[in-house]
Image (cartoon, rainbow, N blue to C red; front, top):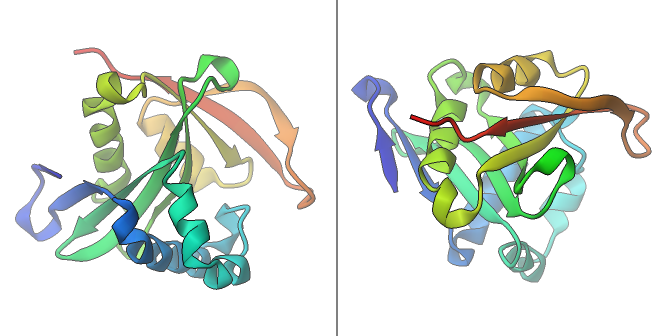
Length: 172
């Protein structure tokens, strides 16, 4: 658990979840899909009905980070170590920050955690996919050092386009 130095009223704590915290992950995922369904490929009804066993299986290949402020979970993402597109050593997904907490460094705190643990976890070159029309997310990722990689591609059956973006862990 890491706490980043920002004003006390907006302090952000980042935690790496354990499988025992699967219900916490489920609750924030439901909040994310309720607040911003357009940002994700998953469907709210699927997430709500997903059984415990399915949630636990997720932890076999992915690490889940949660950002909290004042005891409230305000952001999340997952990281999967893999040899991904554009030389990525890990793939990041499910990024979300609560709209009421945007602009205080939630995503920056999550990515600071990733950067601080990149050597031990294999998270040196990070890749992600973002819907081409999600300009808020694209601008957030750009502010964190992500750049577009490859051409815009057609997503699944949604008919929406997405971009791959990559970033290398910043060097001191």
